[in-house]
Length: 195
Length: 374
Ligand SMILES: Nc1nc2c(ncn2[C@@H]2O[C@H](COP(=O)(O)OP(=O)(O)OP(=O)(O)O)[C@@H](O)[C@H]2O)c(=O)[nH]1
Ligand SMILES: [Mg+2]
Image (cartoon, rainbow over all chains, first blue to last red):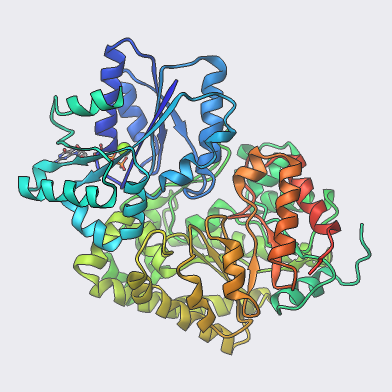
């Protein structure tokens, strides 16, 4: 069983990316369970993914920074007590640092073979967020396995390249994928990377 | 049990005054959800029964464990709702209050807030966007229930000899605006057009002082609590903190300090980089509550002999750890953060709803029996 965490700021495109990824896995006969950490209007993302035929569990948490990891562990253990999907995909709230989410996974009773953290950044807001919320953006990017630069339709090609370069300055080993997740067929490279 | 030579009230006061008590004062910072869980009761039923029912569950836990030192009245969902937050009550599947972040305010609202203040803004505009409270009459009714319930909670705890830390907390103006506007939008406002945000912050700061002092007056508890989950250095660079958080905070603390009101800061996320600023506040004017992401041992070095620290037993430890692990961490806190006083043994960001009974017991018992060695 593998765990993919998709994190990133509010509205960056996490659900849109998740939907593509999950559908692709399902079409390759992989069993997928999605965990939604709802921070926006309750259940909306979950319902949307449900409509697209995905099985969704909601992850509840009183406080983003501290109880999230506890509830995630309980949710994964609960899922795994009845079955063992190939993939669990978690959409996590933008205020969380991946380390706060994954920091306690060693307490899981269920064994996870592989954990990947994908950060989605909104290209149109990258500059503003990098300036204004530099510490959070930086830790998110530094702890990611892959960064998805989304909404590149909102910036020109030069800007998109600059963002990718900027991210590689922070973490030279990290692969970046530029895309417009709400358009079809933009995630080929990403999918290969994840699998 | 060790020989106790101080009352709970003396013990907590001693810690706040940076002196060495007979043993560490204990404040488990329970919530109704965690109390219900430890007692084996159902929070999703209790949460609908009104303030007094929540308070009674918390009192029951206090009595069942032979009490502890510092307490606070029940902090019910209604307290947050009346403050303008969108919350969803606990359910069987989700035994914890949910805070739903969204864009409940528009940029233009800052101007209204700067004019009429946050509380009036909540009553007249925001409350209908985030709750099913329809009019001021309903709002006032719920408000009275919370105030009366809080006063009863305080009096019940005082009868039991406990030290009441504060009446009810309030979110920092910065955090309040961020929650109501959503984090990204609020940050965009600060980036592109901060003028109106600043005007709102100024008004809200004055209001915070006025309301805080009023609450202290009404409750007789001369400690105010402020919550901030976002302004710390793990999220915003120091220049944002210096511009939009620290001056307002100083103003609040200075005003309270001059009126003899002590301040306790609930600081979520990592504040490693921000804590040196707290040394600018008058010595013994405040206390910080850390949430397990700030390095509490480094914090002690920074704040030693200046400010009391409420410690940080992490929710993961309380709910997924073992009693031995909890006891070991409590001992380390008592040795390293509390050896010379200035420490209240507490949980990070409150006792989590999933805390195990045996872990809770381990915390309380270690606190009551472990000797302050240094
Ligand atoms: N222009 C543009 N819009 C996009 C793109 N991807 C997603 N969106 C839109 O951006 C909005 C937010 O997308 P979501 O996928 O819901 O983003 P999210 O990160 O899941 O949002 P939250 O769960 O609310 O934090 C939606 O209106 C999407 O249709 C993109 O590549 N380009
Ligand atoms: Mg989403």
